[in-house]
Image (cartoon, rainbow, N blue to C red; front, top):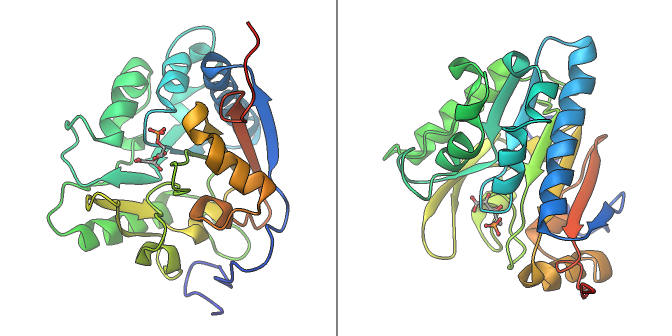
Length: 263
Ligand code: 6PG
């Protein structure tokens, strides 16, 4: 399928090997993983804001990023970022109200956003509490197109996309075997978790156009999926990211890399 309308994305062919094999950086443990993710966030902000007025970051949900968000909310990292210039977005959201314990927005707000001087108008949350999820996805599509810079091909371009990975190989709410995997003509769509929980999720064209993607994986339960991606080519959603010109880096702790920690 070619020429996905308005996304600047030309193909959904996932049969080819990952064009540029992702870089992998293994760190000792969960604390080091959080620090590595937080440092990447700081670096992207500082580099972007040398030459631009705003930096656009897509946050991951799930539990893995929580410790990184806390580090960003505290010194020494907090004051290394010009928060007034930061815009945040989400890669996916669960269909719950924003104050629900499952809300990815709530997690980021509590761990990070309420502790830093970021403008409320720069916090672009997905309104996944809307009974009409398709309408909420369409509104988020408009939000992205309005606020994000575009690359030469017309795709919206995040400075940084943070992603996690599930034990089944999903990333954001791109779950194996679901229709969201094939959406190429919209930036945001409706997804569904294996539990049946509806979600909103960004689509591959958005992730693939980003300047940088960081996938963070920590803990021994992620070791099989990490091994599948790096040793087996990984026939699963997280392995189907195809950065157009940007970078893709996996940050992994030793447990997720399948390594024993020495005492
Ligand atoms: C979500 C996600 C999802 C998450 C992985 C890993 O909202 O659930 O964004 O893709 O990143 O499921 O989750 P953990 O970090 O909790 O293992």
